[in-house]
Image (cartoon, rainbow, N blue to C red; front, top):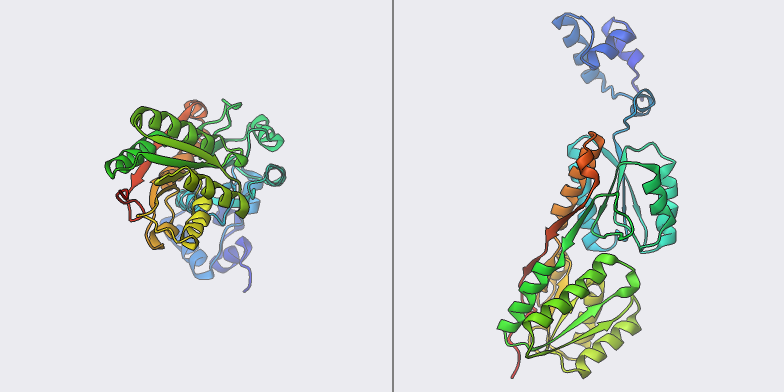
Length: 336
C-alpha cells in the first residue's frame, strides 16, 4: 500500500475512524486491549498522521523558518546545523533559505516565508535597512535574530557573539609572542552590525593593550582585487600579525600570502574569526576567534520556544555569547 490513511488503520483494526484518532491523541475511554490493538496496527501498517491536516485543525504547524546569509560559508552551515538539530530534537521541521548576503534576496525569501504556515522564524539579518525584516517584525510572528544585530529593532530578541573576550585574548597572545605591529582586515561592505562591532572592539583593545606598538585597519570586499590591495597595505605598513573579521577574506588572503612566499606563522601570524573546519585542515592550522556557533544556535532555538510558550520575557534584550580565542599553528613568535 503506497499511502496508508487513518481509514485503512480503522478498517484493519476493526474500529471506527474516530476511535483511531482519539487513541492516537490519548483521548476517549477505551480498554487497554483496544488501545494496544490500534497502536500495533498503526505500527505494522506504517501509518503517519497527516501533518497538513493536523495544522489546519491547530494553530501549530511544528515548522520553523531559518534564514542565513550563505550556506556555502562553513560558519553559517554549522550555525544552521546546530539550530536544525535542536529543533528536530524538539519535534519541529524547518524551512531553510539563504540570502546570499543580499538584502533583496533576503526580502524575497521572507515574503515567501510569510506565505507559509510556520510557527516562527530564526534569522541572521542582512543589512540594517530591510523591508522584509520590517515586515517580519510588524507581523508579530515569534522571531529571533542570531549572529547579527539590527540596531533599529528592539522588539526582537538577539543572540550574538561578544567579540571583546576573543579579541582581547588573541591580541594578548600575539603580544606575548613579541608582536607590536598588528593589522586588522575589516569588511564593511557586508553591512553587518556584528562584523563592524568587531572592528570597534579591536580598536578599543589595541588602544588599551598596545600603547607601545602600531596597528592599521584595512578594508576589503568580496573581490579578489580588494583582498590583494588589503594585503599590500599590511605588507607596506610592516605588520607582523593580522586579525581577520571575516573568514572568507582570511581564506583568500592566506592563499595570497603563500603565493608571495610568506610563511604563515613565521613571516606573518594570522588570526581569523569563525571557528570552521577548513582552518584546522590547513597547513599551518589557523588560530581562530570562535563565536561558539553551536551555543548561539541552541540559545536562539530556546528563545523561540519560550516565545511560542507565551513567555513575554523572551521578547526583549540581547544575549551575548562570549567569543573564545583558540591558538593553533598560524600564530608564532615575531621574527627579529
